[in-house]
Structure formats: C-alpha cells, structure tokens
Length: 195
Image (cartoon, rainbow, N blue to C red; front, top):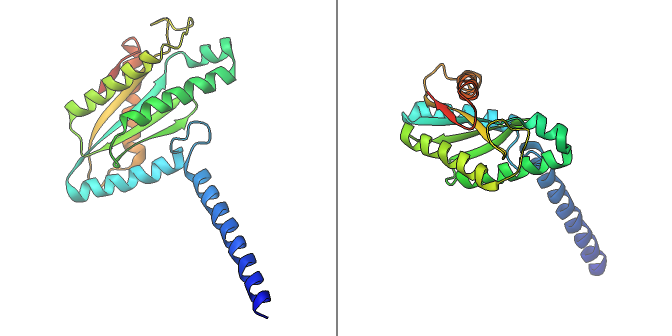
C-alpha cells in the first residue's frame, strides 16, 4: 500500500510540474513578443495605463518614446524578411539595454514600431534616453543602402513627457508620441522630437 501511495504521489508531482511549466509558458506567450522577447502591445497598453494611474497618484511624470525603423520596408524588400527579423531583434536588444530600472520597459508595438516607457523622469533625462537609442542603433552598423539618410539602419523617435491626470489614457499619450515621431521623420529622420 505504501509503495502504491508513493507511486501515485510521484505521478501527481510530475503532473503538477508539467502543468506549472505549461502555465508559465502560456503566460510568457501572452505578454511577450515571440520574436524580439520584448513585451507585446497588449501587455504594454496594460502596463502604461497602470503607470499613468500611479503617476497621477504619486504626482510623477512619465516619459514615452515611440520608435520607428527608417526605411525598414525597403530593407525588407531588398534583403528579405529573415534579415529584417534579425534587424528587429538587434534593435530590441539595444532597447532592453536603455531600460535599466524596473520601472522602465520596452515593447514591440507592431511591425517595425517600438515603444518605451520611463517612470519618474524629466525632459533632460528623456532626451538622453533618445540620444542613447539613436547612438546604440547606429553602432550596430547594419548596412542599408536603401536608406537615404545614412548607409546604415537608423531610427526616428517621437517622445513625450506625460503629466498624468484623471483624463490620461494610453491611447491619448501614444497619439501625441506618434505625432512627434512623424515630426522627427519630417525633419529628416535619424533623430527625435520631444514635447
């Protein structure tokens, strides 16, 4: 009887371990982008909304950066999606390094667009983050002859300092950062615009 109980116990432990591993894998798949291993858009939206509420409560500013890879479609058309995916992975790696604190994170927003959030940051520090991102991507030195700005892959950034209030929403602050991104692109790309 004791041997049978030990066998059943061992079997149940194995089933629990398998279930735990499965739950962990499913959870990771639900919040991370499978290619870049950054947060996905859904998780980003949830976290940004939470930080907006905390920022309002604690009277803290948030910094938001919206990033787009310059002439990425042309790169993909010339070199294929496999090479394009490698570029996105390398850029994601650069973005992870810029997010040093627990309250800072990057996410893949879609395609070749990324977003970054920095809690409790001022304009000068956000400007430094933008410069660090542009420098890090340039140091990758990935050739892109289709880029009319540089012979290498470059990025454009739209940034915003957010003063949280009761009306702050994820979509509103993203909209402003996206508008700033288009200003950076309109000014010649491979640069950032902050409001």
